Every structure is written in structure tokens, then in C-alpha cells.
Image (cartoon, rainbow, N blue to C red; front, side):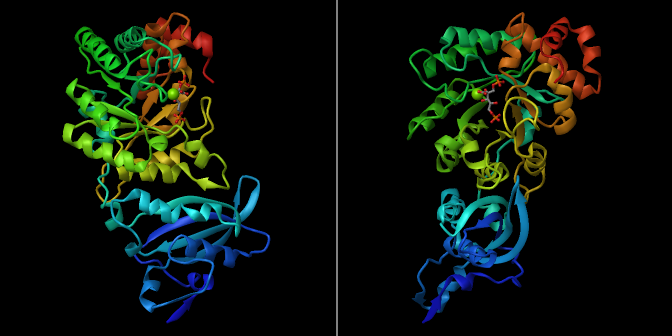
Length: 420
Ligand code: CAP
Ligand code: MG
């Protein structure tokens, strides 16, 4: 029998094995702790230790995490430490995201031993990463579903976000698609309410979509929000497939990762892509000194198999952002052959912001605008034309002013919103 104490989880000379899951935390020790004691508690409580000295057989210590790095760090105007923790692979059940998160982002977030703690980044070892399905399509949606060449794909979400009737919603879709946009998107809180029932919206929107395809000769698609509790969500996925959708949209944070994994399985059966809306992410990632970073949320989403996910607007637009560019790079870089993920920029965007957005994020993205399309002085159709023209110009390296000379709808949008 050996006694396991918090101190047993600290070894600054430990060099993580290739098979370890390595996590980086920002940690502010509580007043009665120092960096070492806080770091060892993080490793202990997130693997197999607890506050009391345990008398156990030696074998279980193989499952212990090791706090193996401590460096001074800042988070905004606060000061703390960057703590590296290496977790042995045997601690985890492959393919089970909730189990992994209950370790690395579980009880430790509420420990009294730390005033603040944030999971900043993970380095996923190959066996654990590839135990997940990963995306089916990723950035290839741009060519497999659309014919977007080198330009970003475009989407719009009807506004007001809830309250439009099914007819109004589908009509807005028609105007947006024929104005040149690729995708109509449901808003995150639109599911199956009485004013716009799910199945009616699905059939009417796709009927308008088919009209728009016929008229424009371009592929068009629809991000149908299937978010729901229990098995209802899977039934909605099935309905989407039966009616000829290419995508479903899921509110991935509010419905949880186990549900996302289930949807991913069901979507594979139908060959449907998944658009991930991240409503509620800011509860985890907004404070730079606490929670779970958007970078990690995006990593989790990729492993669970979403094809595209909102990652912010690189500080343009209306919402606070965490390092959009760095997150996008991670989502589109190699990960043991798992598919990549298409980053979606959204939140207060309008055509005038597109050149700067493309400058910061490149063209391998989706651009989503609600108010920036429907708030166009001449309505949704003109707003869609303006956004499409701005996106094409940015992808071709033409100035937005030159594009506005050719497209009056864009000139009107620039008059209204400018380029900032
Ligand atoms: C955008 C939006 C999106 C947010 C999500 C909204 O509308 O529909 O949900 O962009 O945020 O409801 O705010 P607007 P994020 O285009 O009218 O702003 O992409 O940061 O996850
Ligand atoms: Mg929205």
C-alpha cells in the first residue's frame, strides 16, 4: 500500500509521452496556495487524486496526471501561471467526449485552491484524437456542396431571429438565394415553435431553395436547426435527409457533446454535413482568466465531427472574440488525417467589413450576415447581392470600391454602413 497525496502529482522534470493528452491551463492560486501546490491539485483532482491521502495498491498511480510545467503568465490585466498537465491515455475512454471533459474541464474549475483557472489549449495524442469520428466534409463543403472556387461561402440568417412566419422565412430565403448567397441559416433559438413549425419550415424553405437553384443555376443549401432534447433531434436529422437537405445545424454547446456525437453518427448514415452554432460558448470562454477557451471548444467540436463552426470575426463586428485567426488555423491544419473544419465568421458583419475580414482570415471560411443583409435599405435581395459582390471582390483581390462601381446594391450598402 502507498499513500497518494497532492504532492505526488507534481514532477517538473517529467517529459510528456507521445500518447499523453497534454493540457495547458492558466491558474491563479488561492491566497493559501503557491504555484506548485495549486498545479499539483489541478493534476490530481482532474485525474485520480483527492484531498485526503489515499492508501491504495500501486497500480492506480499509472492513471495519475502529472503537472510538469509552471511558468508565470498573464490573462488580460491579471497575473498567474501557465501550468502544463500531462494525462496518461489510459485515463480516458476513446470516443467519449463527456468522459474526457469530466477529467480535464470538470471539478477543477470550481476548486477552492485556485481563484481562477482556464483550460487554454490541448495537444491531442493520435490514438485519442482518432478515436473520434471527426468531420465528414470539413472545408470541402465549399466544393462538394457548392461550387465556390476560391471564394468564401456565404450565408444569411433571417431577422428578426424569431417571430417570422414560415412563409416569411422561406420568402427571405428565396430572396437571399437569388441575390447570390449560398446558404439560408436558421437562427440559434428557432427550432419548432408555433409561429414557424419545424416541418413546415423545412418543406417550404426547400421548395424556395429549389426555385432559386432553377433560376440561378447555382447550388444552394439550407442550415436547418435540428436542435432538440432527447431522440427528437435525431428524428429531425432524419426528416432533413428525407426532404433533401445537405446540412443540419446544431447548437452544439447548449445541446452538449454527447448529443453532437449522436448527430454525427446519424448524419453519416445520410451524408449530411453539420453546421455548429456555438451559442453559450461565452459562458465558458469570455473571461480570459477562467473557464474553457474557444480554442478548446473548437478542438472538441472538430473531434466530435462538425463540418463548420462559428469562430468569430477577428475582432470585426458586434461580438467579443478570442483569437479567431489562431483558432481557424488550428481547425484547418492537419490532425492525424482527420478532416478539417470550415470556420464561419458571423456577428454584426456587413459587406463593408468583408475586405478586412478576408484580409485577416483568408478565403477558406464561411461568411454569415443577418442584419448586414436584411438591414440593407432596399431589402434582403439587394442586401444579398451586396454581400456576394463584396465577397467575390475580396476573393479576387479587387477593391470594394471598384466592385461597388459595378454593383449598385453594394454601393448602397457602403453608403449605409461604410467599411468599418
Ligand atoms: C448573427 C447571429 C449569430 C451570431 C453568433 C446572431 O446575426 O445570428 O447567431 O453571429 O455569434 O444571432 O447574433 P447578425 P458567433 O449577422 O445580425 O449579427 O458567430 O460569434 O458565434
Ligand atoms: Mg444568431
